[in-house]
Length: 121
Image 1 (cartoon, one colour):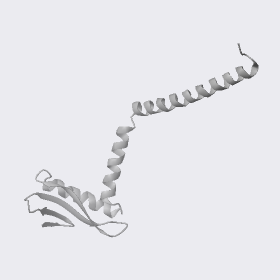
Image 2 (image 1 turned 135 degrees about the horizontal axis):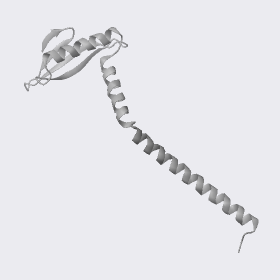
Image 3 (image 1 turned 120 degrees about the vertical axis):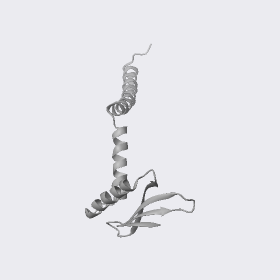
Image 4 (image 1 turned 180 degrees about the vertical axis):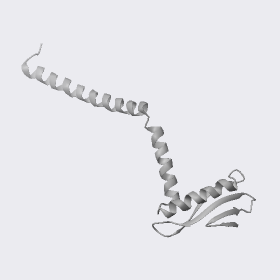
């Protein structure tokens, strides 16, 4: 393990792979947490240090970097799944099911009325 300061380190596994990690105390629980930043060399030192700096600035605001990243991923996924076309298709499916049920009820009531009025042949 090579330490770079402020909870930033490079973990060297026995297999020879290297992974950037960031260790910090979670703002709410004060428990130690570890976040893998990515493998070295695809994630360069400068990029890993930028991640550490961004994470430290979030921690100053009492925001957990892990939770923040999950929220970003969730909002990105939500933005992709809530396009106008997808929302319109969901609305159409719900509306057509509801209308089908209403139509069936209307037809059933109409038949009952017709039969109760003596429209029998």
